[in-house]
Image (cartoon, rainbow, N blue to C red):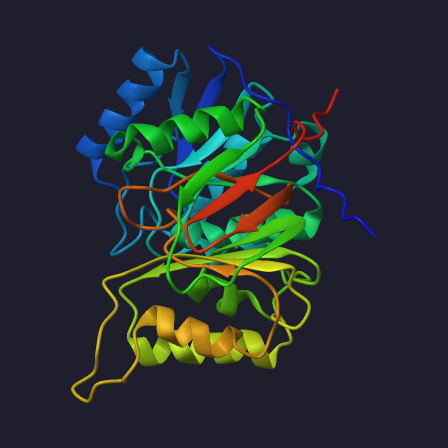
Length: 310
């Protein structure tokens, strides 16, 4: 049975308001203002900063109550059409279960971000809504192709990515809802109120700064929880700055992935431009997509526009 897409918020047009908050770590103000300038002067959006976006509380952009209040305020404002995370880091899972989604359900809007923001994406998917895994305010100026992919995703245009291949790719075709994000947060989410089914879906994974043994441990967690059993396909993105202990683990991040996927027959691709590197293509989580994998290339597409609320 063909999967149905989750509910997509309305597409975004120029002059719409984009609210910016930090759900997690302290923000780099100069980098954020560069992203704000890009959205306003190049794309014509009106950027509204959260009231406490530059607050600091140890590692966090304000304490839990402050970060929650800024997020709630943006969710509750019907004139805000997009909520974009300033950055990731750590802290989203500490506040996500305290959010009131009542007004969001009356006026759904796009949530944008990656890394620690995976927690919020999974929460929205558990509620039945799409959101966008893609560049955040501090990364918007990094690469024009990825920034354009985000603008296209917000505009409701079909996804059409044709990307590089990899020698480890396992060929095949798949179709299904696309889900995923940061491996650490995907493992962290299992058993929570935001836990979702992976069955029949296309899963994408990325991470940064993890010890290789811990990448293996998190993949073991996904496998033990049954999250890999009925996948339609897998997109392995960038695993940046992976680390060794004093005793080497003996495998690269991609070799760890190959081992864990070896017992399944779904198609798998590697080195797709999603993650913490300069390239970070926007993905509408919860959208139904088609995936074609060959050794030489990978194609990811959505045949029709996402369902837009009237």
